[in-house]
Length: 73
Image 1 (tube, one colour):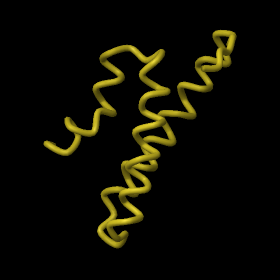
Image 2 (tube, one colour):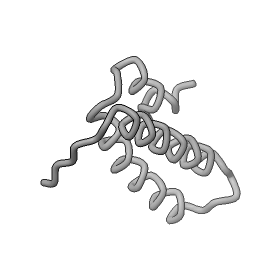
Image 3 (cartoon, rainbow, N blue to C red):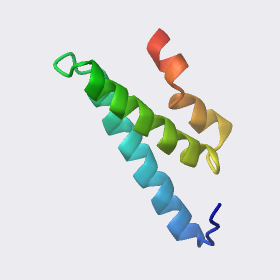
């Protein structure tokens, strides 16, 4: 386990970067042109980034990126 100390500005920037990365991956996972192994790799990476984001995101923001909720929409 590694620890980091971030300023408020750095924390907001990390939040922004993680959200944008998850948005891109969600878009890629909905692309019908991509095959199974590629989508599986994106899904695994998404789960890692989601767990990183979950460490400091508000529950309301976190629910926007939960895969189970998004697939039902």
